[in-house]
Image 1 (tube, rainbow, N blue to C red):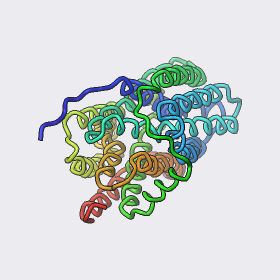
Image 2 (tube, rainbow, N blue to C red; image 1 turned 45 degrees about the horizontal axis):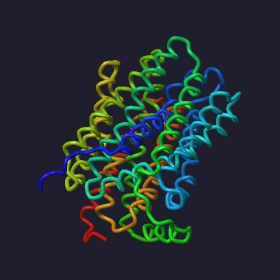
Image 3 (cartoon, helix red, strand yellow; image 1 turned 90 degrees about the vertical axis):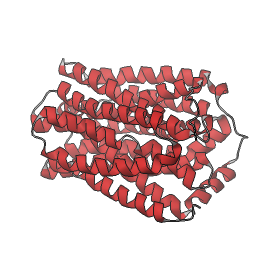
Image 4 (cartoon, rainbow, N blue to C red; image 1 turned 30 degrees about the horizontal axis):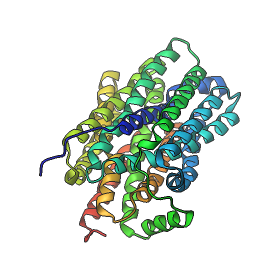
Length: 391
């Protein structure tokens, strides 16, 4: 069967921008962590806790986002949440201490939760029946945001700039993105308004499906693999190799570049019916790369390894969601939101557990969390594929 022509709609461009801005908000703490720790006396565990708090505050937002989408429309809900994200980043920029940072991160997490919940369902609505390609392509802009943030932010900190100015600049950009989303709210497909009871009923229907829990765990593991390397790559290079922030930023950028290439390539070349092979092959490839990565003793080889890791991990978040929509008969918005409730804690848990391991045994040892996650993901995917019929 021939593929449909690849065509982006106006809201796709807004979605791409939102992915980039949201990614910048996720990445800004990792690239600032060493400088932030020196200024405020935060340990590795404390740094991991910042990410864990952000991720945990995403969950309440995820759970109410379905009602917000049904009541206000996805585009308007995304605009408001992006504005909240920007306000949180501005509060982060002016935070006087660790406690204030955790409060600001809570705002960032809550705003980011709605963004995380609704961007991919919006893409699914815009491109029904062929969402895998568009999900992979547009999710690449998350990695574009990571790439730009770590390169520019790493250089800024290396030159002696304050991490606070980075937070403030990103806060302003989030507010700009919020205005753009609100202006395009009428471009989004709008479902009939649904009450809280209908939204809850649809979520409960998904939760009762045993197959969903396999995908939930796969999202946790895939999100964890992505989150662990996104959060710790820059600090790992700075602490293990004694490098400046610029090189740490380049390390995270190498991982992000692999993610960009992997998602764009998947979006253009992988058909919807081949998503299962893409996920499985990527898990095996990522396991191999993850086992080798801690053994690299030079920065050039490490950068190449991080690029390869990004290439192998790239497809998981968008492809697992799109594949789940094919395998589970359910409301897509409810399904995607609940799957994100697995991926986001995985993102935060990996950052936290790698910080704990890094504190006691060194960040080099903590890198083995990544292949462990990917091995489990491959096993779960095999179990799901053998579980028939589709329900």
